[in-house]
Image (cartoon, rainbow, N blue to C red):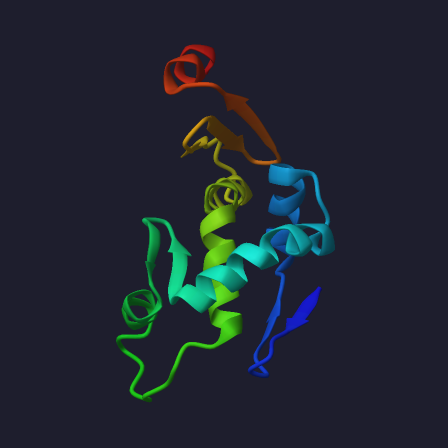
Length: 136
């Protein structure tokens, strides 16, 4: 699925991310985009981006990712959406990457109200870290 933004930039969901959307949310990319687009657009209008550290100013996050780029450029809406979506899917992407190397790795995602453990193609959710570690 490809999204074209108002600034002309484009973002296409990588296959691995589509798999993670299915694992994490049980949605297809179109359903996922419909769900997250309002949040991503709000972040854009507020000058923020979602990262692995939470919400950050766009200029700070963009500068961190592009500090070696010799060209002076501005963040695009596609870059912004990709960054936000990556932050959302990061734990699952990491688990899938490790599993593809043949490892039996578990990646823990800790949210406000749940703990999610990803292993390859599946996830388990828990109410707290103690329950998650006890079960694992």
